[in-house]
Image 1 (cartoon, helix red, strand yellow):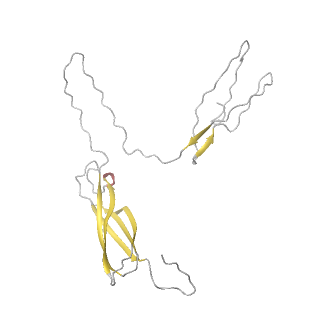
Image 2: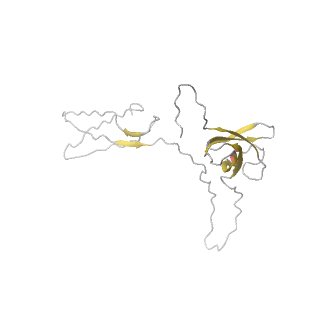
Image 3: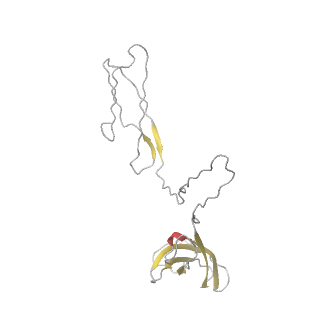
Length: 208
């Protein structure tokens, strides 16, 4: 290797008395941030004492730069052996923990006094509260609530708004490897009409 990007291969003699081939194997590392088909070689030059001309192929590799997350690493094995002609053996293997614990919080909310023919934009902001009253972000969801066609204002029940709460985000101060802790949350709701009959002067609005 001349440097991290260049290789030079020198062969003393090749094919002196018969046909002879040679192959070079090397490893490459992708250091850019883009995906796609990448050529392995930027350029190849060849020279020999006889002035032969050689044509080399242009290999390429398909690079995928997607983010890969492994939330559950392989457990560390514990080695053990059973002796020859031994019918049984009892071994204390220590402790293990439940993996990937978490909870699902499902919320229902009633949007009050929704006028007929008006869609509603609804947002839900969820935070978790620690023992000092400090809040930590746990999620935000937004919804378009369809308009109703009743002749007067009606309350609209929005059901089954779900939030996933992994246990490794627990800020209660207890053991993060268990679901034995009480976790405290705050949910905030924002709602407003999407549709309105107000029109600004000289404006064109498309109503869906």
